[in-house]
Structure formats: structure tokens, C-alpha cells
Length: 524
Image (cartoon, rainbow, N blue to C red; front, top):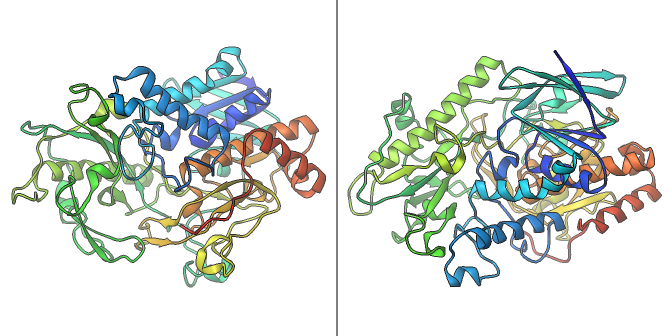
């Protein structure tokens, strides 16, 4: 039997943007229903197990106050609950993992604990209801409005019809958009359509999108043997080499993203090459009292386990499942190769002491609960951010386009991983940018807002709008916008169209700690 539940705002998808949206709406006094496909809320930060990708100024400015509180919460979590060394405990900018990819590398369970504690007051009071392991299966619409969204439990099949004045899509793949008939695009746009220098020639390629990755955690115990059973697809992946890659994928040879020139990696620091283990290290044993961790822990989100042989968006369920399983086989094959065949600096082969850590990611198979999705369905928006708005080479004055309807800021290089269209990296400099409200608003549907990577960006600009603090800002702005509209009896497009309402909404954003503009900065 289908149950009917109501709230002021329904958020489909409990990823990074979805959680930020729920927090913002609850703090604004609104009731929220938040659904999440996996057991863990947090998306990139937790179920996908990706340490935050952030810009160089993140410790001082360039993110929302609530995201900074989350970052502070991570450090407090380790200080309050872990046996840190005195040097680590006294370090104001503690990086628990010591990874080089970020100034704050941490375990996904730490992020989960902090996010759960942030939401706890609103969950306990009944303002926020979270339905984990639920997916959207249908939506009811009336004209240009969404009336309800039905979600299904992955455990018992229970159906729940969720009703609200406003809906937010914060799913990893934009799953609510096709169900509700919301206009959207996927893949790579044509240069003739967008005018972007790095868009594809000729027709658009809807199925050409960035590869995704099944991340996993490992540690290393010298002298022990933790070799897994040989993966079923190992021989295929052991020999696989893409035409744009300089060597077999399972090798220590990769490419520099900005130039696609060959580069050599190494497992551990000290061999004179880039250490992949240290790159995304999420727990550094040197920060903790001796013996607390048997080894440092690293998160494997490396070039070698990017999967680009096919899309999982807008394909048949059978094809989607086939690519998901093949991506898992790639990650397990990388692990097996590391354990048995990876060349060592001493001339030997394999690191059998590499140990898979299922406990770190909360799964039985040791792979993250959900693949790391870099590129989602994207709404056809009231305004779409193009390469010309943010790319350094497109901006002679050295400043990104200034958007009058800014609802936040972000900064990252335009970073596109190899794609399902068999195309290599696109990695180009960008300027510190703003997030326009128009990019969160669909061209037609009235009561839906995009709240994560599904905003009005292109295949190209998705490459800099998809990172953790930006997604958080997008979700927070969406939650605050829906709350503001409920307070004022408006639609999001009304807020954007009225100079007075836009100014009032932006004032509310700044009061909530959302930065709307950057100081003078150099490109990244």
C-alpha cells in the first residue's frame, strides 16, 4: 500500500548538495523530507568515498559558513574521539589523512558522523525526515508543477508518495528530471550550439560524458599477504589500453591532464615519482599515537580505475547494470594488479601487503556504496554557464563573468576526465566564479530546483562546478531559495526577475553566511 507523506520541501537525493539543502531549509524553519538511495547520506563525501577537492584559499574564504562548519567539524571529530599526537592535536589546520589532493583528507565515516550530527537537532524535532535506501520511481505533475514524487524502498518495496510545494533534485544522476518531465541535457554539447572552444565539433553527443569510478580504500602491511581472488574480468583489464592512453591502463604510466603527455606514477613516496598512495591518503598513521592504525589508509580514486567504456545514464537497465559491474571489475582488477604484478622500485613485482578495507567504505565487497559520478543529467535552465563565462583564456580582463543573480561562489580548474566518447582529459585554467540563481531554475517547471551537479552548466563547465564545496553551496542556495519562496508566496523565477526580491533573497543568503562574490584572485 502506498503511503502519503507531506512536507514543505521534498529533497530527492541525500548527497552533498541534498544534505546542505536540508540543513538550510530546516534552519529556515521548514519541514523537509530527504530521500537517499544508499545507507549513507553525504554523496561524494561518504557513499562515494571521495576526499574533498577544494581550491587553494579554502581555509580563509571561498565557501559558505555552513561548509566551513562542516570542515571544522571534521577536525573536531578527530580531536574529540581519536588518540592524536600532540603535534596533530595542536595543529589548527590538521589534515587527518595527510593526503596531497586536499587540505582536509579524511575517512568517509568521519564525514558521515559530522553530517549526521549537523542534521540531528532537526531529525529529533521532526523537522527533517530521512528515508534511506529509497529511490524515486514516478512523479505526478499538473501543468508546469510537480504535485508528488513516489519513492520506493530498496529493502521492502514500500512505496511512499511525497507531496510538497517545492521539490529539489539532488540525486547523483538527476534521476528526478525524466520522471517529472523536466527538460534536461546529457553529455557533450556541440560547439555550434554553445560556442565553447572545447565543445565537440559537429552534432552534440548526449552519451559522451565523463567516466565514473568505483573508489575503494586500502592500507599496506609489509610482509603480509592480503591478495584477493583473481577478478573475473582481470585478463581483459590487464590488457586494456585506450587509444588515447600511452600504455595499458593497469600500469604506472598515465598522462598529465593539462597536456595529455605521459607521466610515470609510483605506489609510495620516495621513488622520485608522484605517489598515488599519498595523493588521496585519508588516514595518516603519523598523526595518531603509535599502533592506533596499523598503516596509513588511502582512497583509490586513481586514473587507473576511471571507467569510460559506457554511460549509466539514459540507457537500458541491463546496460546500466553491465557498466556498473564492469566498473567494479576494473577497480578490483586494479587492486589485484597492485597486489600481484605492479612493478616495484626494487625490481620486484606486486605488493601483496596491500589490504582492501571494506569497513572504511561500509560495504561487503570493499568498493564504495555508490560510484563517484562526475557528470549528471543537467536541467535546461533559465541560464546556462558556458566556458566563455569562466575559462581563463576566454576572459581577457582576468575575471569570470559577474552574475547579478549570484547565489554563491566556487573555484576549480575545468577538469574533465576521459569520457565515454573515447576522448582524453580536458583540463584548462578557470577563474574564481559565481553560481547564478538562473542555473538552478528549470526553463519551464515552476516548483523544482536543481541542488547539485544537475544545474544549468555544460559538459565543459560541469568540470569546475562539480566539486564538493561548490555542490554544497548549490544545495544550500536551493534550500534557502525554496524557503524564501514559501515565505513570500513566490516562485524562484519570480525572485530572479524582480530586482527587489532578488536583493532581499541575496541579503538572506549573506545573513546565512553565503559569499556572493570573490575578492581579486589569480586563476587556477
